[in-house]
Length: 64
Length: 502
Image: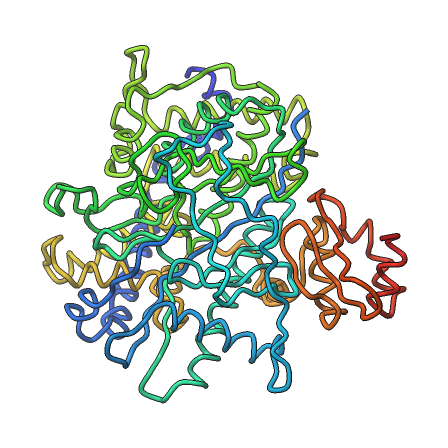
């Protein structure tokens, strides 16, 4: 499997100083968390009202 | 030299008829499709003449291995249900109690994604059209998934044109190693397990919808004892020159990147198989166990045992296939593997494998199983829920809800690689680089004269003499480059037939 090293692109860490990358990663990590929080708020609004009944009644005939 | 890869996807959607006691999925599917056909002008009050599917060439019982094991069950062809051909060259029909859309034949992976997105839009328009016909307290809802979480599965199949001269054994060997391991980027994710005897305590979340349903390595079935390699030998093309590899192991993907990689990498691997360019064989000691093991392993590190006693991980096999594909493209160009789209496949393939290796969660905007996991795990943490909690299963199903306002996939921030306006056009416009162009244009311009259509022929009634069948046994003939000017110049089907010399 050694050959695969040749085709890989450098990771971001190879391209920029580690400190800068870490700061960016933290920033990005916080953004992602904020996005997810927002998304989870939305989900609470659109999730099927009665999850128990919804899941129980979601029955499909087998297909291919 | 490998033949150009003509590709299509067929998706069976899950269907729910809300608001009635004892719903019948076959009736609901028929209603849904008919509603679309009326709303889109394929059928009118005065004419019930949407062009029907022609079953004359359907032989799903023929086995690629050259024999039919007596215990095998060839699938039935249901001819009595709604079955229409659309002006984009697609087929829209009721199959096994599900509405199913088969994309037209596409020339590359990007075109497949475009037509798969067009199929989603057709599904959405169908739901809206059905709502117009139903009482206000009823609704038809579609789900682009492959399992109801109770042991019932329905498929999203891929089709690839391959050279008849390629030994089937070689196709089977290499495809098993690809199909078992490509799951790490094709999986649509699932809460729990449907492997008999396994509970959510053992597998709380897995990578694919489908892996639990595979019981054989190679075989003809598609609904029972499903095999990793399906041997249906029904090329819908010149059988002396071509096979159609019918792939039944994949998940239906809301993520366009997952669909792009699913068909793009498989088309490349098939070209390498045709040209015998894969030097290294990965033969699993137990392929059925391996497909489940890969699906159940979120760490992507599970060693898979090979027949030679060594082990390998899914990622290692995928890196090897990517390396070989890059070398192949460097040596042979991209002409027969999807042109420019193939270069994009190679780059995305590499970046996704890198992401999976370093931090799978970094792919939450690209891969379905990661996007879904992020949502469900986030929700689970926020509410302090156990993995067995039904709300998590509800989230799983709702990820695939085709109603844009309800779909969680639609809110997950997934990257789109085809333009929405292009996809809307592809609901009615065929690809221009396969025979689907001829089929689609005939239906757009001369539908009154087309009696029936299927993948490899069109039947015309031009009023004067016997019905005329136009065979289309070459998937890459009938393109815009071949016949585009005929449609510009002919005012009628009879003139078209005369010019075609049939």
